[in-house]
Length: 398
Image 1: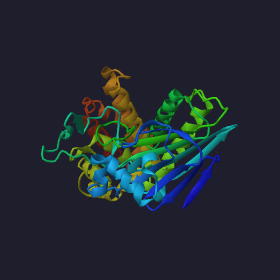
Image 2: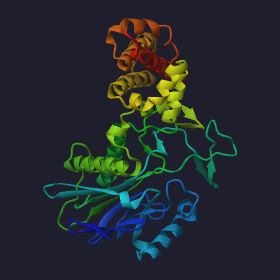
Image 3: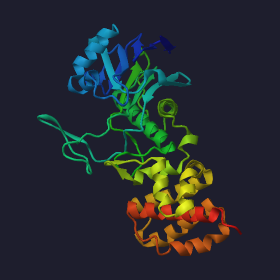
Image 4: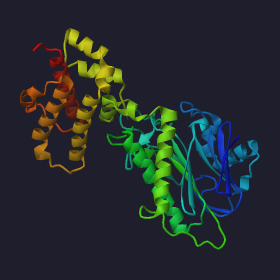
């Protein structure tokens, strides 16, 4: 099926588990393709292929994408009558039917971004601990802390693949710069959606398997563009299209709407480690918080967790204390002021939950002796105590 024709130089098609771009005129292509990557001027097809479903990475085809990338790509090309020698491929578990395509233009310039993606299982932050080492003998697994030597694997599902098409020629350096801009745009999208790393207590900047392919049309008598940074219109259009396409596809693949991400659970999950990964369910978070309550109050809290965790006022107060925690972790705020800052912010959270802002001084006094621990365990305990203290007062008769 033809998705669309663009700038008289490229056609984008979708067939079952593949989306491919056919270049009608010569393009210079820079890609992360494992079999045909790097800078090429002989590529006529750039494609993105779904090798499995997100939870089924054990399939033969998915495994071959890593163990035999050339053989894998050749097989896909044969299945879809594409030229193996002149193709470059990206691969993913994301559904090709959910692809988001965005187009922006300015004067002579046209930019097309086509993004597939999923991030919930494999979101990571630059600098997170690695899961493998590639040396002379190939790959060897690095066991995840908290998991046994016999089970070193990390959840591999979750990949954001970006195909970017530009209708004007680019100098080689500018072509590399487009990758930087597209990556920044992807990261900006993840930040705006509050996406967490699964491997650390930070925000995700991407996934561990993200891939990209950029193609710039060769045009006679048109000087190659030399800039794709933030000060250039090309950089702006790349940022706009890639960020919008990344957000769009994450709505379809993962249901990541801004409304859904307005969640106390999502804000706090990166501070919990379960089975070696940073994650916790809403039920588990409510159960943990309920340990600071007793009897019927604990039961009531667990039953009402969804409205409590999605109440915008509660989310705002939780976001504020989480942001301040990050400022301490990054060294922006000095540790000496942790007790006074966190006791005040915990009081704000209690007041948000209870709705009784006149009790702020009393709440603040209650937390002065509870906010000394700055590790994740101490921070989560403080937040849980603040949340449940507010809940106990929510229905207290005046």
